[in-house]
Length: 234
Image (spheres, rainbow, N blue to C red):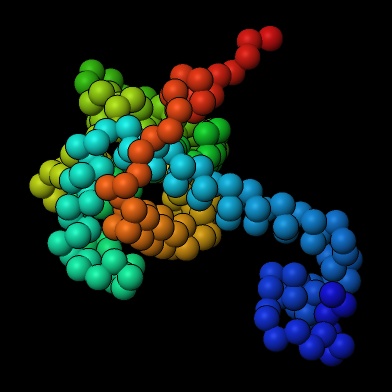
């Protein structure tokens, strides 16, 4: 893959864009750069989505009531299992959306703190329970882990339980829950492929559960043994 005028490939890839970009110096068009791009694509574009899909599928199949409720909604709204509606159409299905939202909540996304520094002035934080006011000085790194945000028992009661029903609430309450759903992060560090990720989740889960849902069963899977990740104490 040489790039430039000698490249006659019709299918454009990320690597073509890097090699053919006139704004990039030659020092950026090297093998190491392409390896880094490939690693990012595999990690963020493949592993993250597959993890969310795997965990969400596990949770759906673990609770037969959730599986049947999801299949029932899909059977009503998608009469022909071979012809799925658009992504926008799938996003309008309340229970499918609730399933995906709680799947995202338990998948966490980026686990470590992505800190921000306020560049203009001090931040003022008021504790809602005690009323105590905290002043955070200018440019102090501030961050929070999605693990703790998504497992906050005040916002998400019984946080370790997969429960799509928690999202089937009035709009005002639903918006508060979505404000605490940070799997794709927000702001300048938001996942660039968030729309692609949502498309993968909606289309894959809808197709799988509409066509195979009532036939699928969970095979020899124990959460504590096969799913839960433990950190070894050193």
